[in-house]
Length: 314
Length: 314
Image (cartoon, rainbow over all chains, first blue to last red; front, side, top):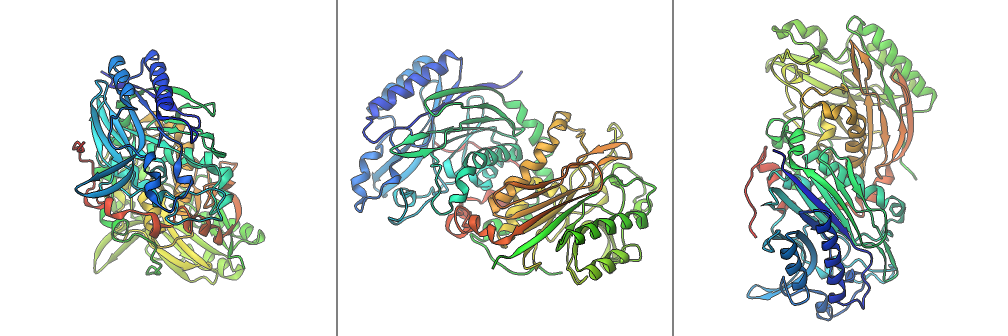
């Protein structure tokens, strides 16, 4: 018996500032229906899939940006997506900004919520590695002030029993960090769902601009291979509010091979059949962690955050 | 001022069982002279560069294999390499099997020794991730009994001040593990030297055979990029004692791009100029570890060796 999941990456073209959530949810529902027609079990949407990538603008009073955040999930704007998913029996993973204002104070998170085929929420993941900057940097052509708008997750990476397998989540910059995949690999992950918004211009080092597509594939392919897991990487891209962004959505096998790749800069569905038992061909051999890992000599990974330069002994 | 190191990968074609160390050292010296003619500061040789890859055979009495190991470095067979390196002012990195028999008992290691341009030994690295198997597995077409012939390093990964920069080492299977690169990245590594012997046939999962070249580049390119370091990967390949082995030596930039790639299945020199300040374009921006890493949520990396399957909370 194969444990096969037919998964769709639901890539989004740009969402402009003035697009309403209702307009965007209609696009999400259109993609969901395409996924259903294609026989998919699950569709994965990008990071911040309900709004434009608002961290490109700075506001001195952060509460002026509160309208970009959801207060609950589902809510009035997204209920049609939940309803249609349950009706069609297609699960989904949705990225959005979440504002919590309760007994614990005010928290702003960059999250993804995973929803099963019956419409029930499996789990919500908070982004761990927040990139960019905290302060206004007016010399940039556009801001990347995620560290102003979002707190990093205090919880780290989880893996959930869902869709007949072990499913994990990460968001955008998390995919560049091998620790993200490994934390999930150590929980037996078989499929990692990852949305992203990646501007093609990286102000701190523009020499990286022409390498964005290469780096995007490189980190997801190596993370997949080194942990024997599928990775579903989904972009919101195209030219959003004048900022060109990467569109290269990818579905990647435990072998590291690309199974499906987006061809356009707009809303686009790509699909792959993922036999979860393929994972075992890596996690049961070369990457049998219990047999081959050496945590006793990995002490720097968790005892230091940054670089310490000391010369090794002879 | 740029800190530029001109580095050579000194790929070796096969070493057959009956080839003497003196014959092999002459091949190493030939490559060293080519490196000197090319103006190189450093040449990197493969794993187990003095002998055939003897873990492909099993012997019931391990001491019958002791002749494959060096007892000291330099020794009579390798002294000509050390002498020529000092005379030409070219450093080298050499992989070999080392047998220690002293007050601490008998130890068998798979090591690389790094030698500066003046012939002095910078350091010796012991392989951390020993692949393959411990017992005889007669159903395999050939053995990969490294776990019988070598102890894993108790020391982990070091980084040395050498060649004007921060130089680390790893051996063969170490390159498949992101922890290897990260342990060195956290010590400010700028260039990682890695020799390998990689049979094209992987008995536990032959579906990986046609992917060997892809996987080899994938892990070194992602490790380079994610840690902002050069990686020099050097093969002993070709058909050795009937076993076809990977030959794809590579010099890789901190961007993850391949700067030089071997074209043959024999002894071959490839060269690249490595501006060590390139590393800072990654370690000072996107991969500024002190700013962006999250070790407080990486606890599984060091508290568990193998997989633990528990379902995350909602």
